[in-house]
Length: 352
Image (cartoon, rainbow, N blue to C red):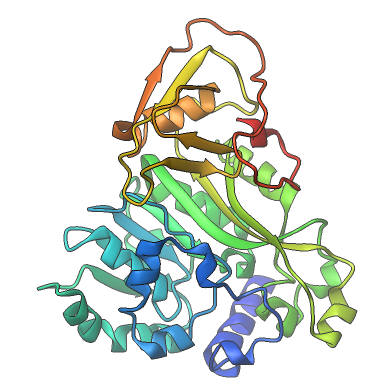
């Protein structure tokens, strides 16, 4: 049996039979709170059936704004909580695709399809669920450049072949599309002897990506720049878990990246300026692009070429005015953080 097959079977058993709800988790790695959610998402959460919520395991809220009419793909959708949240945010004209390899979890999601559509007031479902793996979306018929937004909530760490996962999700994203996912990251590489431990793997620890390896992985796929929107350090309160893997520092992070052709691996200065119009719902006074960029409504601010590209070439473009182009280069972009967020991840994209 291959290691990939072994890991898949371990995860299926852990999430399909061992865990019957969040109370069965040994750590807080696969847990989140309503604090990470916008008021609109918290309101949508009240429309989700209780069994779906009970069988949900996630570590963040990877649901970006402006999903109306979008095709959204949820990798590792589990019992369907984020799928049904996205279904409300995308509206009846949107399309939400949930993919998971654990049939027991998918059955929960499917059992509530009719009741959720009735609760949302939709005449026909805008949701579909597929049983399969994140590493092979083509097998499920998900075509190239067919998805506006890919989301995932504390699941990619469970995949044995993360390069295959990111290669596939990058393939299905449309040009200008967004990847927004929450996951567990590690401050050092996990010892190989722990990779197959069923508890450490199922608790989203043994498969956590080392931050720098993640950066290198995206770079290898043609994505040299990504943004962090939220971060918290995890505590390993379970004595046996801490004894086994307590030498590693773990972080729950929410990351966003955009499929754009003009992104650079460091922040470059072209003298561009951006002004937020205040027109994104729930963001009337400012918009947080990431944990280093709070753009105040009506205030022009200098931005790097990468940030300008995000604001000009994605579904966010109508909400910003960007002045300048890349005809003149002024060297590396120098800035101080535009918001008071803390920063404990020292990578090049933080100042973009």
